Image 1: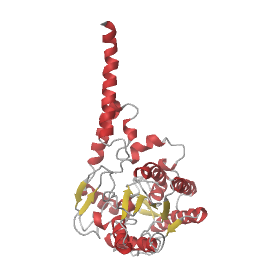
Image 2: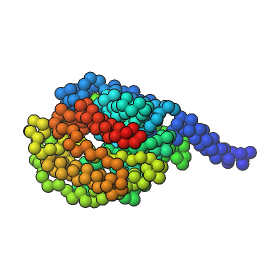
Image 3: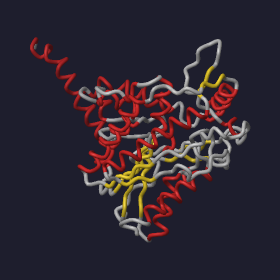
Length: 371
């Protein structure tokens, strides 16, 4: 009897652990999710703040947490788009995002059924994109290609940190980083399911509070624009060499991961609206600052700095493409640098997304297996 009482805590522990694992696996929590699966949000932005977006914007995810339709058995070609907010396209309606437009254009023009999965995530640096490529590609059966649109967030983080932001450093515990870059992942529940179950629910609920909060977004954009407009402009950029080396290294890792799985990889540079020659009125849409607030004087980097640093990251992308012999699509100059095509310095409007989708689809249609 005494032995049984001594064993009871252990048996209870074992029962809870086994039950936890069954629940986790049964609910699909043994997978990596970019967003909450089966999410359906409708966002309404103030047109005076978020220009170039018509009407409410639907944000819908499939069973894999991707902003895309479900995979189908009769898909002829499958593309996974990995990137940050310029792939995520969070301000735009589901059907207006360039990933959705690309899938529709390729399907209509080629006669093939093309699936384009949107694995974009706000604030994703190239370091996190390496993890996305490594974890997500095996989950998409029959994946033919990935599109990697990168550089913008690396630029922003690097400028803000003055050189080497956390997510671009080497020697990071990748399993630990999963907590930051995925909505949920197997890492949230291992090694002991019951121990992390409550914390996982808390993290998911916390992330969910910010989805669809358009009042907060509208207010934040307005404040950011006022801050930039009233700031002293700094025209000397920080040393970006360390960040650019890390960025190139991350792109090479993604290429290696893709080639190991025989998946076609297409790198895409960032379109932007950082032309220093823009009128004062056009510059009023700018929301990025690049310098941490240092009261009492408010300082932000000039359009010239943003333009030069973005050009440096785009050049790094093109250089890696040339060195590794991979396909590259340069969006520099494809989207006119005016508020008609950009919500702010780096995020396209509906018209801007259409130009990007058209340019990408023309490229794909001119190459195998479409051309």
